[in-house]
Image 1 (cartoon, helix red, strand yellow):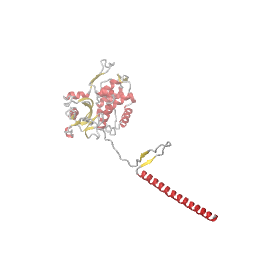
Image 2: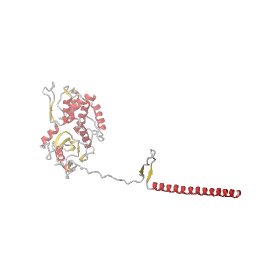
Image 3: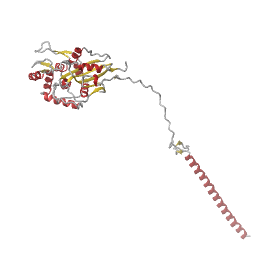
Image 4: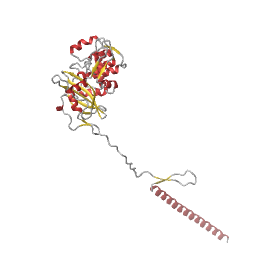
Amino acid sequence: MRKRRKKRQRIATVVLCLLLLVVAAGIGFFGKKILDGESTRTQAFQEGGYTAQPSTAAGAEPSVTADTTETESVTATPEATETPTPTPEPTLEVQTVSGENLHSAHAILIRAEDGAVMMEKAASEQTYPASITKVMTAILAIEQLADLEEQVTVPEDIFEELTAQGASVAGFDPYEQLSVRSLLYGVLLPSGADACLTLAERISGSEESFVQMMNEKAAELGLEGTHFMNCTGLHDSQHYTTCADVAELMRYCLQNETFRTIISTRSYTTEATSAHPSGVTMYDSMFTKFDNSGISTTMANGLSVQGGKTGFTDEAGQCLASFGSLNGTEYILVTTGAPAQNGSEIMSVQDAETIYSRISDAQS
């Protein structure tokens, strides 16, 4: 009896162990299935384009943000804006100036504001400037002598050579004392070589030293086709320029109000001196040439010639550097090499009329 009881106990123990093994196996099997399913869901979640972000608080649900690896670009359509109608710029008419229309061998017309070339004829070829040289003489003197009322004595030793060369003079006397201002008017209005040499010696001590300053200024302004040998414009084979260079020089000078005022003046009377108790009255050579030619300084198209500098030698021909304005736009015109016909020097003025009158204002 006792033996059978022990046998049953052993059988029960074995059965219990088997049952425990079966239960353990089942738990392991179902646990693996659960883990596999979770892994599959996680993979599918990630493949769907989303990434779970860790929660920052206990019990909080994870936040989900879209993966921006591939996004669709959306471009906003700009709002319509009103484009202003551009203001037309003055231009030369279609029947532009040709070489056959001009007496001058060289010519250029530029817009003063930006230097744009409106027309040209052999403008980069070497030419002699004659008394247009005095434009450089005047601007250098203005820049070097700040006090326009300073009194300067006219040297006695300059007149013999000027008389021998037939140079134009302002009418000053040896040892006469004049203001820098009056001397500048003497340079630009009657084209006075006496005024030029007086200023040159006052500034540099000699004409030679002053001419060196002139060439340095030309280099500073980029006037590569220009070389000076004197401050008056008397002929020298090594004293030359181009119309393009003179136009740029004029453009530079007109930015100086003192220069602009003087070169725009028709006549000027100096202060009284011991030699001239009533002063010396001087008349501008350019305006005089317009008056003598019967050509108005107001063109048919409304352009007004406002000032300029003439020049003439046998080698240079008639030369003119002038500027005019049409409806607020300023132009600079330089011509050289016009012949003198029967002693008359009006062909440069005729060329000025020919060119200036062909400027049309597209706004009108």
